[in-house]
Length: 158
Ligand code: NI
Image 1 (tube, rainbow, N blue to C red):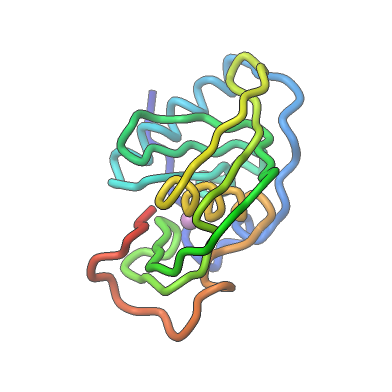
Image 2: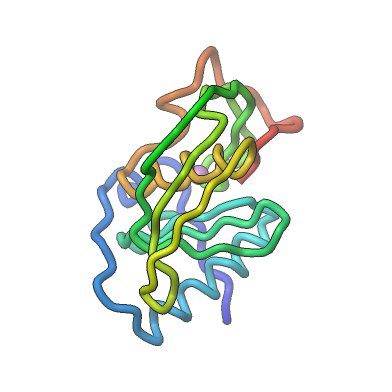
């Protein structure tokens, strides 16, 4: 396992749409482990492929209940609304207020390419929205209401 370099706002790779993963290889497994290690090392709650320079639809999230790897994730249902602060490892030292659904149901594949369904409220719902947006080249700053703030204590600091 190894830490990967986190790409920072302005890097063109963060604004591109990622391709689906069609096969899990040893390299994919190594990437997932490296992403988990990199996320934990940076005290983040989530990390998406393009943030480590990989234009593939892979995300890792850990809201404190252990890491989850998502391959080719899709949001299939949302409900409610939450309005809270959000940050991103690719935009260090900043946060902004973002509206997200309070509940998210998603489908994805695991590292055995087996489909699974996951439901999340609150932080997990916010993390899924934020991370899956990265796979389509979108950053949370597009959705910020008001201005970006210097980091203090964001509710969601990736
Ligand atoms: Ni992010």
